Amino acid sequence: MERLNTQVAIIGSGPAGLLLGQLLYKAGIDHIIIEQRCAEYVAARIRAGILEQVSVDLLKKAGVTENLEKYGLTHDGIEILTHQKKYRINLNKLTDGKQVTVYGQTEITKDLMHARQTAKLQSFYDAQNVHIHNFDSNPYVTFEKNGQTYHIDCQFIAGCDGYHGICRASVPQDKIKTFEKVYPFGWLGVLADVPPVADELIYVQSERGFALCSMRSNTRSRYYLQVPITDSVENWSDDAFWQELKNRLDENSRNKLITGISIEKSIAPLRSFITEPMRFGKLFLAGDAAHIVPPTGAKGLNLATADVGFLADALDQYFNQHSSKGINQYSEKCLARVWKAERFSWWMTHLLHRFDNESEFDHRMKQAELSYILESYAGQSSLAENYVGLPFEADKKLEALNV
Ligand code: APR
Ligand code: PHB
Image (cartoon, rainbow, N blue to C red; front, side, top):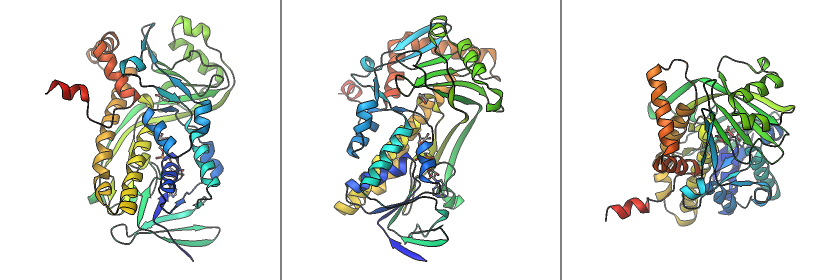
């Protein structure tokens, strides 16, 4: 058995684990990442791609924005298409100058892995039988690799191992509460090397179901269709996908749509999921290990980033300023943000998707709500404020009302 020692053991090398590693490195905190998959698999996973400004700022702090600054696309607005009418949400003007950045999570993962390699930071990929132990007192992690057993003593464990990971599952049932909503549909996603249909994202509400026109660059598009959760990718040829997308678009977009061969096609289920609390003694959960949002508001990666920002600060305070304040507040601070982003993602999902079991009354109510949001300054402002990412500090405009 090989025995190692570190300050923080990070389980999982998705964006949460990798970004945490980079921020700890910048703060001079020793850590090791343990990942069950191989590096090539981790680097190739296709996920979402919209970053809030605070996420970009954190990646900047981690020193990994060279490519993002070169290839990321900043967007000032999004479009919502309903009943053949497009509404532009001017995110920039409605939020006093904020923007979002289109940059694929796959690219962020690669940039973080590259930075990690350059700094020669220690990672174990292909780790088997990963277990965490004693996180109430003297934590340690065990795993196997190439027939060798490893034992890593540490002061803290960061559970960044996603929804199916072992960290959350290792917490005794009576110490944890989870909240969940599973939606009766999924998103069929296609990635294709064709120019996007429009300069900005189009969220489509239609009687045939939801669709989304997104992109990764000016030459690579990402499109999604709402499909029944029982559907399978084999039922969707490229032609069938493009035809159904056209059916859900307005005439102008339909005519502009450039189709091509798909380079990736998959169906993702939609789920809302929250774990409380997010700290158990010396174990912290971060990212998808603690919460899942449906992709409709593009909040998954941004929430993971926010958790990791809080956690890196808390560990910095602990190791470099000898204060436990940050780690004691970690769970509460994260969850305040998590519930609001969960609400927004659930609401966007509810508003824009077709639910087959909806009564006619509920359907008309939803339509009225959408009209209100799109036709009112206050409605659009609320959507925009959530979409670009809620501020971390208290709302000054609201405070001014109460003096
Ligand atoms: N041991 C070690 N690693 C594990 C284990 C385990 N038992 N179980 C899972 N992992 C690894 C997975 O292989 C994966 O690489 O943990 C990593 C978790 O990564 P993600 O699922 O990408 O989760 P996270 O880093 O929190 O990223 C959140 O990804 O899909 C999005 O919506 C999500 O955008 C959000 C972001
Ligand atoms: C994506 O580009 O993959 C994407 C964009 C916006 C979303 C969800 C996914 O709301």
